Length: 119
Image (tube, rainbow, N blue to C red; front, side, top):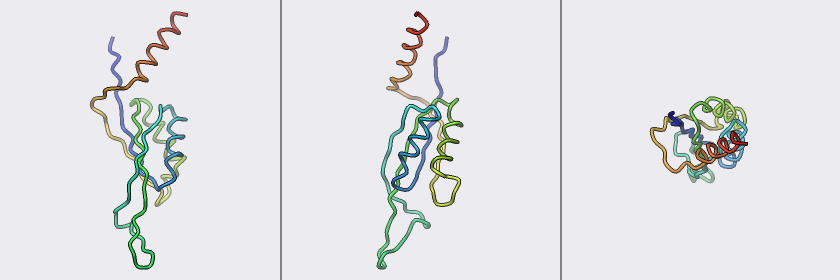
C-alpha cells in the first residue's frame, strides 16, 4: 500500500496586512496553516513617491504546503477572501513539490485514523 502524498506549494504575495486573510481562507478550505514572510515590491507598478522620495511598498508572502487534491479549493478560497480577482490586490501561484521531509501532521493523521478504526 502506497501512502505517498503529492504536495503543491501555493505562494501568495499580497500587500502588508492581508496575510491573515490568506491564512484564514486556507484553513477554511482544508490547509493545515501557512508560513508568512515579509518583503518589498520592486516592480514598475510598485513605485510610489512621497516628497520626491521613492517608496517601496511592503509585501507579505504566504507559503502554503497543501495536499495536491486540496489545491484548487484552497486557491479558490484565497482568491475570494484576499480579493485577488481585483487589480492591485496581489497574486497567487502554485508550484509542484517534488519531495518533502519533516511533515508531522501527516503522521499524526494516520495515527489518529488508526486509533479511530480500532475503537
